[in-house]
Image (cartoon, rainbow, N blue to C red):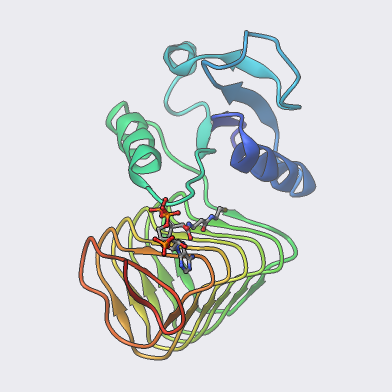
Length: 209
Ligand SMILES: CC(C)(COP(=O)(O)OP(=O)(O)OC[C@H]1O[C@@H](n2cnc3c(N)ncnc32)[C@H](O)[C@@H]1OP(=O)(O)O)[C@@H](O)C(=O)NCCC(=O)NCCS
């Protein structure tokens, strides 16, 4: 039996997740977000309170969904995931009904796969990573923890993406490339060779900026 869900955050990414959870028929109790007063509905998700409101819910009574997005730096999202895991809560894995998933893809806790995504055979996606709207992750890729593959990215076969990396909207990565931990790939970049950890690359072909 599905547990009801609480979304952490009530910004843009959280609202996309809320819509997806409603489509899936999942009961959403509301969101925790200190930027909105309790009971507020301007974000369209009912606001339950701020992060400390979570203590009103037993760890085994609810599941969480990480509603923190990222436009480059994935560290806040990772910090939120780790904070609530430490408190004993679990994160729901969310796959939009309009995503196309290979039978054998392996999704860890808290992974989020949005509308129009294609994930091909042999792919592993680690905890708390987002595969955002319309992205393609082709065969045998490994995606680390807290990664954000932004809308419209195309990741060819056999690519490794390290923990905390952000691949900007519309980026393309050719087959077999290794992208290191916490790498930031700019919007629209075409990545043709390995990128070392903590680098920021952009352009066609992608170069360090
Ligand atoms: C790569 C990125 C993080 C750089 O941001 P920044 O560090 O603030 O860099 P700036 O905007 O100051 O730009 C620095 C230089 O890089 C260039 N540049 C920035 N982003 C670029 C990109 N995506 N492709 C090519 N060049 C880029 C700028 O034109 C600028 O060049 P200049 O010095 O010759 O004028 C950002 O532009 C980007 O692409 N973010 C991804 C956003 C995203 O994926 N959003 C998804 C939300 S769901």
